[in-house]
Length: 419
Image (cartoon, rainbow, N blue to C red; front, side, top):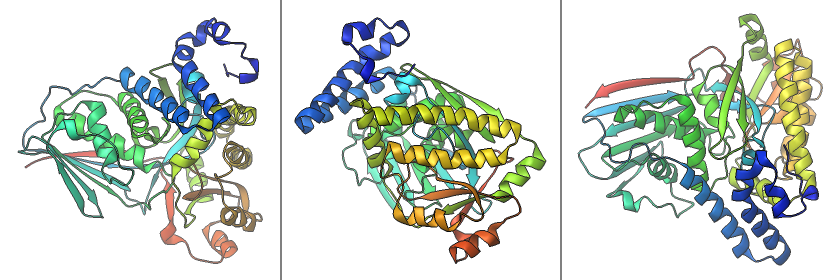
């Protein structure tokens, strides 16, 4: 059920819609606040709307590890894949996903055959938190959980802090993170790194939390950070192969996924024809996600219609993969790119549009992965074309600027050692 603002007659009538009753009770106030912000231009209304949304999310979460202590002298290492997303982009971000669920198709990617993200979590003989970030070689020590507050956008350790907060970690641990991907890649690095941290922490504490629980915790982490990120990223790093990731409306969200297994021969074909290439420019996803969330909250019908189209494209792309119709798959990629630009004018850039145009002769479809504005692009080549043809069209070698679709490997590995 899509909530179209042109159809709303008032709060009382809205609450009568039984299937959306609880969600509407929660979200009526932010919707109203955002409309007041749009009408008055007073920033306080928007600030208060997002404050309430974050509070709703925080109140719905559970701090599973509160009061527990980590296993002494233990180190957990998690290597994990990034992800590339296809159709359904932006349907997983709040508040749309709380009111409508969402549906996204994604798959894991590797960097030069290696896991691009590594997290090391270990116990320490201190009461606080030791956070490290590689390759920057930055580190910080926080002496109590009362000081885990998130305030500075430039803080390298916002993610570390937020994960500890949503899990209820009380201290006595070290968290080291490392990424081989460029900043602002659009490959879900931040969310998947959060998934790896949570997986490592759960193992360090001996807590039996499954992957679906981790997906929910990552989504909660993203909202506490204020990034407005969606729920689909950790699916790509925690589960193997092509996946249709689905959400049902509600708080907390009811999330699930369905794996699509075309078979080894077909998987080999699409891996040869898919090029995932770094555009050379970074972007800040939060700005683009904020644009979309705000336009949805104030009832921009163009955005709402684009959302509806995005959901239907995800269903069509699932069918295309199951039928193994790669021409249709590529066309749907290009349609998703158009929809994403309708959702946010900042999704693409003149440079990326020019690059797509230069590939017209050999491209069956193209799009930007993630929120856009830069990062990695995805191109499905027409049958009979390969990487050399791609390089010829853009006029340069790109071996060091690509990541590869990986449909066979386990998307993550865990190693335990003792200090």
